[in-house]
Amino acid sequence: MNSPIAEYSSPDINKTLTAGDGPHSTNGKTTQISEFVTKAGGEDRDKPTEASDSQLGQLRAKITSLQDNINVFLTQRMKQVKDEGDIERRILDDGVDEDSD
Amino acid sequence: MSLDYKLKISIPFENNNQAEIAGNSLRPDPILKADEMTVDFSTDNEKLICYFQGVSDRVIRVAVSNVLDNIKTIIECIEQFEG
Image (cartoon, rainbow over all chains, first blue to last red; front, top):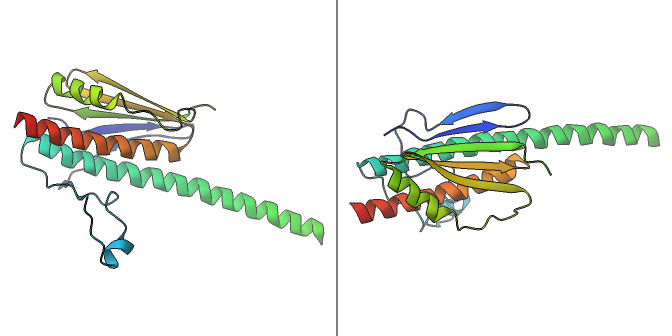
């Protein structure tokens, strides 16, 4: 069985995302409950079951790895857009300040 | 609004029947914010193809994560029923 794969495209870039080389686990980094909750003694009651050794079990673990990689990639893209917006806002705000002096 | 942000995910199942079951299970789910994004499910032999188009990375991220969570649940079900 092959691995799951994702192909992203937007006006500025195209990118292929994969599950990576592994090891793969159903316990994804970006799909767990917040560490603030666990540090406060909270428990993840929706924690996924471990992947079995079957092909479908391994597929589920690989999808979790792919999901992590997609989430990290898109979160970085969102942060980049936000940062660019912040810079633009600062420049515009500075311009207003200069005009008002 | 133009749907310029696109993500196509290919999930390789063991056979076409499993891919069809997954697609048919996902398709009835209504899309939240249908004016901001679309999701299409199709199969290519044993592969389930999920095609997301949205107005931003943010809407794509939310939808993709939900669909992948659902696919993992579907796989667990297939494994239980067929195992």
